[in-house]
Length: 293
Image (tube, rainbow, N blue to C red; front, side, top):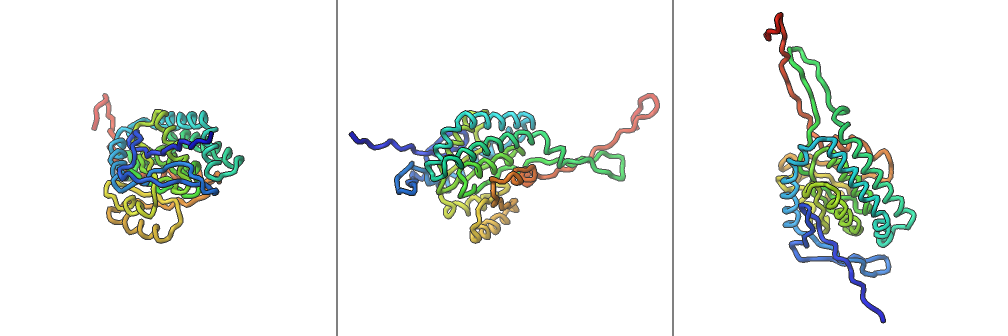
């Protein structure tokens, strides 16, 4: 007897929860044979705004954690992804990726998380400095997280591109709202299931699905977003995002890269989403008998 498969409805991920889209809209994800693979949420502006609220609420706690602890959590995400390699490989194959290439992509994604876990407590030394000044002061420059980052993830990379963008952002203490690939969205929500079970506080990473055409203006114009990272190459969208970003002088980056190349995993991506804070502190001179003057 033939039966209909029970298709998974891939929900969105906001504030550590898996709500259905506020809009109530979905689209059918189909393979090359025109077979329906899953129901995917078609997120709205309201979903994005809810995600920004969650990201802002989580920012204080996440940025205030020790760098070492952030590294522990990123490594835990890698551990959880390692335990679900088979599932992610199967999802990539469903979306048209060759089996060998799918296995390689999952392994690279795990390694990339480990790479940035190691950088969590090291980039400060690389990009910070003690500055020479012509007065009796200590002068320090240290990197601090920018805040809430909106991300339009790569369209042609279901898992590796997503991981390669999220990891440096949260390694630096930022929180983010991510729009996943429209044509290859399956791994994005499955990855959020990994995040939800890996000690990462709710709201640090929020992942929604939908169309760039509908959402890119909201990602770039929201006044409580401090930076936007765009990982595609649509010239019209790039122009509009730049114009909207100028409204509140948010940082604007285009990370349209080949994420399979090792040179594109580097601490300078962490630095893009950091602000350099300089602090002056007077030097106390100690005189005879321990008197300060």
